Length: 166
Image (cartoon, rainbow, N blue to C red; front, side):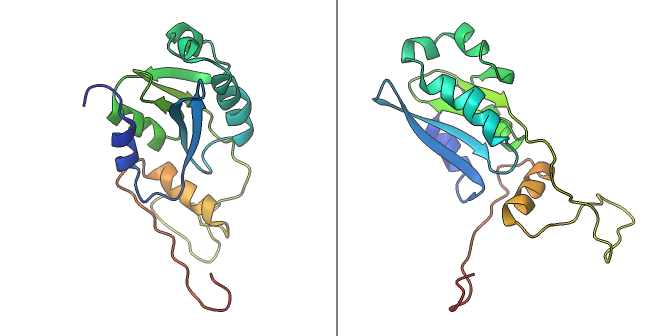
């Protein structure tokens, strides 16, 4: 698929509650989104080095590739294909997309490991990764996304129970 399409990316990432889409407006009239996987991105870096500088720019500045590549983000790239943009998101990158631009901005803002996801002591594995799930659902989803980088992996949240709504 040539060019980038917000609609194409949204269709590929449908039914993915761990995918965050933050809507913003360029020049107060062009809809744009920051899209990333919750738990795989350092939120402080995302806000400080990616979202804040981009939302302060006008469309003319955002259209200039040199301005974008000067962002403080590590590994900033321009993507001109929607499928490559989806693959970038699935790899843990944050992207900025707008139909007003002819490219997607991708930035690596990976979260540093700060929790223990070691192998469970009661369930030893001989082969495969020695990683165990933890109590926090977002962490578990990010573990799966980190291992399975495919837009066809979908999650559905379901509320069970009447008393506790869990």
